[in-house]
Image 1 (cartoon, protein in one colour):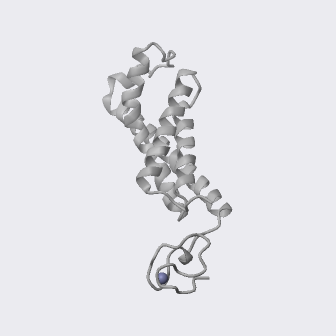
Image 2 (image 1 turned 180 degrees about the vertical axis):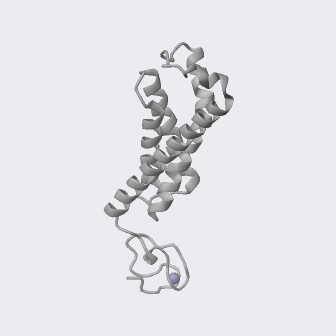
Image 3 (image 1 turned 90 degrees about the horizontal axis):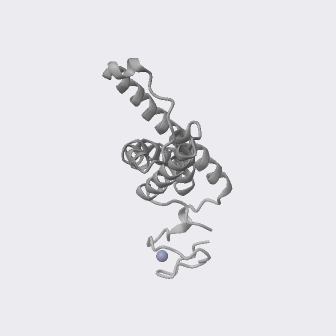
Length: 163
Ligand SMILES: [Zn+2]
């Protein structure tokens, strides 16, 4: 059985890597909603790693999605430079003339990506938490707090019966 939960940073980094990796591949393949799909899948991965409690899975997925945006600010010019970026539908002219409109669009896009990462994280963490036996207080000795081997009946440190 896998450990119940990884650290938040680890889960966010894995989710971020998957999000940007999947999003970039889909972008190159000219897949509609590529960044959004990547963020959702990244959220699913983060939630699998950090599912207790479920809201932490959502947090990890949301952060993975949120951080994907600055990552794309680096990745997209690179793949564009490499000639791998398919022609984009293009941003309508009025947006170029109004920086405020452009910023609003970008903020909405960031919110959508973070939100999809969050939803992915919550869904994934919830499913994982339902299918994984919880390790509760049995994990450490209640008397001396020593970490216990998974099948321990007696604490190896103080000898207290632990199950
Ligand atoms: Zn003990």
